[in-house]
Image (cartoon, rainbow, N blue to C red; front, side, top):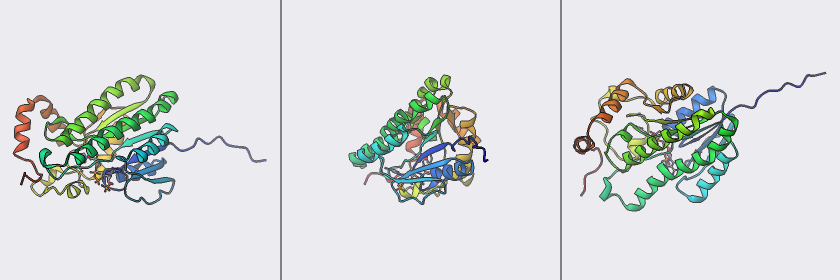
Length: 252
Ligand SMILES: NC(=O)c1ccc[n+]([C@@H]2O[C@H](COP(=O)([O-])OP(=O)(O)OC[C@H]3O[C@@H](n4cnc5c(N)ncnc54)[C@H](OP(=O)(O)O)[C@@H]3O)[C@@H](O)[C@H]2O)c1
């Protein structure tokens, strides 16, 4: 007679913005770690070998509600990673585009974390990774302001979740070679090569920090140094400095 074996189901990871860049790198690493993947993007996604692709625009209330429901039904790891940059400065950017960014970088992160955390807290395991940015430490744009919110929100939530065995972490990548800058029509040709990281290196370092239960991950020594310095400088000084190095289109 065959003995029935109690085999635990694989852990589930839901990743937003999983079609390319850092999100796709997370998907590759977590698949290799045996995770069942729920991949979310507004782009059509290939079906992962174990998991499901969901096409959803997280700035559309109906689509966001569908993904919230999926999070509420229980995932072990939630990676809020979808994001984009504006090609133009604040007053040259249509307000609808600014609101869309606020919806994706803040409302979607807020709602999905709120939906996903309760079942993690009940189980006493799992966690949330919210992709912010190194720019979140610097007063440079509405993009950086939204990423600053992600850092602040994640660290506050991390404090409340940690005693229950659940990790919440803000990931702050620096320059990463993805389609991000081309999509935002930014000319990055002046950024020195050594400042760039690959999306695979960023995702690997983020997952290592997540396993170490950190609430903040800044991949790369050069980025750690920039973050440390940025946090000590007066915001009036850094915002003036950043205005001289802005890579977006100036006002016409
Ligand atoms: N690359 C960098 O240097 C860098 C540095 C710091 C932080 N980050 C952050 O890292 C995260 C990942 O960016 P990435 O560099 O990997 O860029 P990416 O390759 O452009 O990936 C972002 C993904 O998010 C998706 N997305 C955008 N808006 C969406 C929406 N409304 N609903 C669902 N999915 C949406 C994009 O789809 P579409 O292709 O259709 O737009 C894309 O697949 C972002 O949060 C970004 O802010 C990037």
